[in-house]
Amino acid sequence: MDNQDRIKRLLNYKTLLNQLQNLGFVKVFSDNIADALGVSASLVRKDFAIFGIAGSQKGGYEIASIVGKINDILGKNKEQKVVLVGVGRLGTAFLQFGKGFHNEGIKVVAAFDINPEKVDETKEIPVLPMAKLSEFVQENEIKFAIVTVPEAAGRQTIELLMSENIRGILNFTSLKIKSTDKTIINNVDIEHELARLIYNVNQLYNED
Ligand code: NAD
Image 1: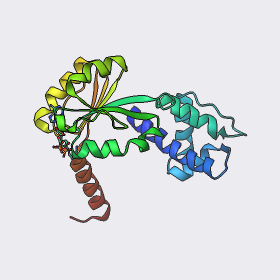
Image 2: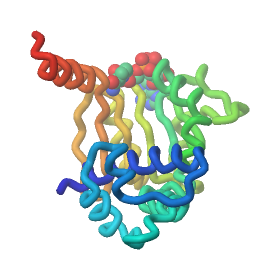
Image 3: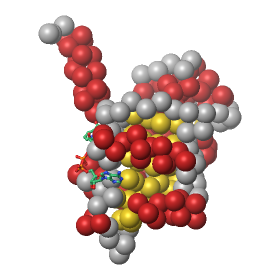
Image 4: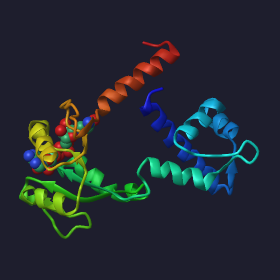
């Protein structure tokens, strides 16, 4: 079983368990989770066992303890500091969404741009000049970056981040850059995702 599929299921489990908690539930059975998410109960139990989440046949699982464990696995119990490079239309949208990420333990702590007019160190999430990137990343032990620069600046930006020991990069430029031994690069392509969605919907409804 692909580990990425399992991580996606963990995120689904977590969303469901948060909803159950909000409704006042304390315990849950694998059958309940399976029914709600359209997977088999044995798969839920297998996922939980693999990640060391224990429950009992009779009593089910303590929701709070599964949520805590899933957060541990996803690294959400520890604040994950992220920097963003390229404060244009897309980058600004991310910065404005900043609070939405905080709930999940992800914090965009600073942004960087080559254009001096974009620089504003007084903002809640400061926009700093590129010349300060190296020092900031080292001092704040930053491991993650979002790249929203134009395509022409993409490779150079990603190489710079890699040279600063950034371990994970979410790349929004249209360049498809491969991960290395040291840095995982996730290339995000919304057009690609839309095309995939449209294809799947058309398959489902047998339309062109
Ligand atoms: P934009 O032109 O509005 O903003 C780009 C910003 O990057 C500007 O503020 C610019 O000053 C800055 N910049 C340029 N060169 C830089 C460098 N070397 N170092 C640091 N900053 C630099 O662009 P946008 O519309 O926000 O798009 C940003 C990127 O996202 C583009 O590559 C675009 O193709 C891509 N994009 C991707 C998707 C997707 O699905 N992945 C969707 C929309 C846009």
